[in-house]
Image 1: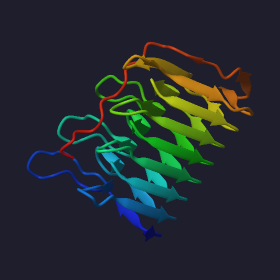
Image 2: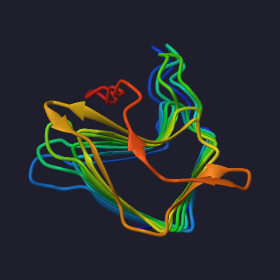
Image 3: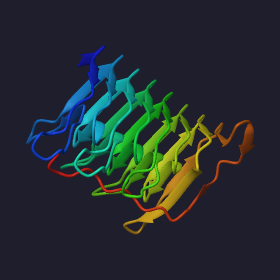
Length: 228
């Protein structure tokens, strides 16, 4: 349990310039990682501010900001990454902010996430050429599912929400001034799906457009290295 914690400017390893994650939650053997953090800040980390692997995390009133790429090669820089290891990971992100990430604000691989009353903004494209998507959900070593309720995603270089063979439920959310609103692609033979739960708003600077999911031919990102 982490309350009122500030994790700032985590440095990469001296030997090879890799890693530099702010908060990491993982499992080992029969022991499953599980963290709850409230009223906290994780910012200025490299590779990822928050990394969850085969574990569970609940983040409430947490600011995840200014994530930087990996120093050794300029890759990654994700605000939050969640991916499976010997079973799905689970994330609950509530009343929080993910700001100024690279590649993906939130990247979910083969896992489950619930986002409520949360803002994801300013996600930039990465050095690998991947467009910066606010929320990226990829079917990888298992089904990925995400439920977004009362979420605001704005100013993404790529898609606000990008589903690669994953199921996404979207309700009461605002998609504002993103290069692509909602993107769906087929991954591992499964078509991505974004279900409109109602009261969603898409557009930019006062101009509203229908919230429609479509394929823009985007490529899924790679998960962070297993050795992390």
